[in-house]
Amino acid sequence: MADEAPLTRCPNCGRQNRVRPAAGGVPHCGVCGAALPWLTETGEAEYAAVVEDSALPVLIDFWAPWCGPCRVVSPIVEQIAQQSPGRLKLVKINTDTAPSLSQRFGIRGIPTLVLMEHGKEIARVVGALGAPALRNWVDTHLPAAAAPRP
Image (cartoon, rainbow, N blue to C red; front, side, top):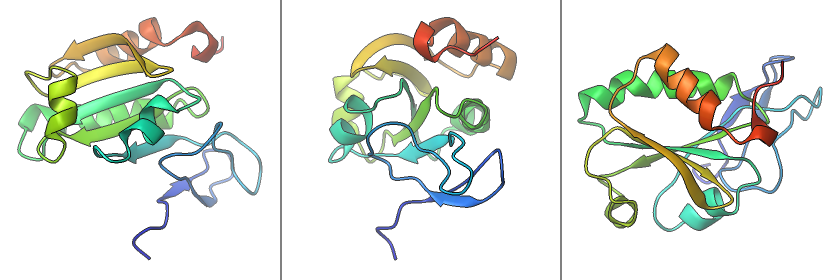
C-alpha cells in the first residue's frame, strides 16, 4: 500500500516498526518500547505537520538527486539520525520537487542542513561536511533537552 508509513528497524530488538512522517510525540518500538530513529521525507503539502509540529528537533536535509555532494552527505546525516533515536528527526526535502520550501528557506546551495526546534531555525550549514565535523555540528547545536546523554 503506497500510503503506509515506512518501516524502521528498532536499534534495541531489531523488529520492524512503521513510523509515520507526521506523528505526535516520539516513535517507540511496539515490541520492546525503545525509542526509534525517525527518518522521513516531506514535500510542500505535508511540511507543517512533519516539521513544524514535531515534538523532536528536526534536521532538514535540503538535497537533489543530481547533486554529488548531497550523495556524500546523505548517508552521514542518516547515520546521525539512526544513532539519535528519541532525540532527533531527520527530514529530507528534495529541492527539485519542493521549490516553495527552497525559496522560503533561501536555499542557494545544496546540500543545506537546517536544524529546527518547534518550527524555528536554530542552526544552518551549507556544503558537504565530513562525518566528524557534521556530527560535531549537530551535537553543538542540538537543543540541550535533546543533546546526547553522557
